[in-house]
Image 1 (cartoon, rainbow, N blue to C red):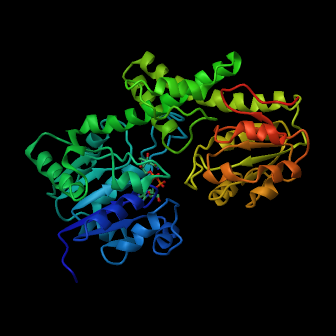
Image 2 (cartoon, rainbow, N blue to C red):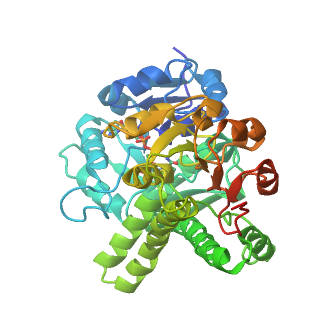
Length: 459
Ligand SMILES: NC(=O)c1ccc[n+]([C@@H]2O[C@H](COP(=O)([O-])OP(=O)(O)OC[C@H]3O[C@@H](n4cnc5c(N)ncnc54)[C@H](O)[C@@H]3O)[C@@H](O)[C@H]2O)c1
C-alpha cells in the first residue's frame, strides 16, 4: 500500500464535504483523503459517475482522484481510528423543535459526530469544524472530546467553508480566502500550521487567513448575513422602483460603480434561497438575542422578513396583473433550483411561490434542467395542482403565464415566438430574475413584468 504524507478524513459527504475533499485530493496527490457518511445511498453515488450532487466540473475532479487518493466509505468508526486530521462537515440545519425552534442551529448531527470521534479515537487528533456553527461551538466540542478517560489530545479548529453552490469547484480552486481559526496556545498554533500547510498546496499564502477560533466561527455567519443583506437591500429598492418608474438594474449599475459599495450581489430577484442564508441569519440573530442584544437580533431578522415579502409581492403582482384571479389558470414556473447551476432546492423561493399560487388555485407546471428530482421530493405532500415537466416548451404550452424562478442561462435563448404561439392569450411573463430581453418579448406580444422596472404591457 502506498504511504501517504498525510491522512485526512472528512465526516459528511454533502454539498461541502464532497467537493471540498475532492479538490484537496486532486491538489495534494500525496495525501490520502477519505470521505465518510452515514447515508449509504450518498456514499454509493459518490463511487459512480452519477454523483449525489450536481456542480459544474465536480465529476472531472472526482474522477481524477477517486480510487487513487480519494476514497468514500460508510465505515465512519474505522476511519476515525485511522486518521489524525478530521474535518467535520455534517449538516447544521435550523432547529425545528424545543428551545430555539425555528431560530437556533440544530447541533444533534454535530454532537453525535463529536461523541463518535471520542469513542473511536486511539491517538491525538486535530478536529476541524467545516460546518457552519454558532460562535463558541468549538468550546462545547472540546468539552465533549475531553470528557473521556483516554489520555488523548484533541485540538479543535475552525475552518468554515465559503464556497457557493453552482460555482463550488471554481471557488475551491481559487478562493478569495480561506480561514483557519485556532487557539493561541502552542498546541493550537501547531495544529493551525498543519491545516495551513494543506491549503498552501494550491492557495497563495496571503489568502490563507488565520484568526482565533471564535472570530473564525463568527466570520462565516457574518459573511452570509452580509451577502443576504445586500440581496434584501436591492430587493427593497426594487419595490420602490416599481412605484416610481426608476429602473432597479440602472440603480444597481449606478451604485455598483461606487468602489466603496462594489458591484456584486446587487441583482434584484424573487429573493434568496439555499440552505445557508436564512439558517445562518436566524442563527446569528438567535445568538445575539441570547446575549440580550435585542436590537442586533431584530436588525438581522429584517433581512429575512424582506426576503419573504419579496416572494409574496411577486405573487401579488402576478395576481393583480392577471385580472385578480389565477384560479384554474395554468402557470409555468421556469426553474425550481434556488439558483442556476445547481440541483439544490433547499429554501428555494420557487417553493414559496408554488404554494402561494396553489392557494390561489392556479395549476402549476414546473420545469427545471437539474432539479426536478428534488422538486418531486419537496412537493410530495401536495397531491393536486402541480405537474413536473422536463421539456420547457411542453411546460409552457397552453399556459396563461410563465414565471422565471431560476436564472438558468438556457432560459435566455429559448424560442419565445414558438412559446408565445403555444400559450393562452393574453400571455404573461413574470421575470423573477430579470434575465430575459423584455423589449423583445413585448414585441412578440407578451405582457412582461420584470422585477423593479415598469411593466411592458399591451393591456
Ligand atoms: N451547502 C453550502 O453551500 C454550504 C456552504 C458553506 C457551508 N455550508 C455548511 O456546511 C455544512 C454542511 O452543509 P452541506 O450543504 O454539505 O450539508 P448536507 O446535508 O449536504 O451534507 C451533510 C452530510 O452529513 C451527513 N451526516 C450527518 N450526521 C452524520 C454523522 N453523525 N456521521 C456521518 N455523517 C453524517 C449527512 O448524512 C449528510 O450527507 C453545514 O453546516 C452548512 O451550513 C454549506
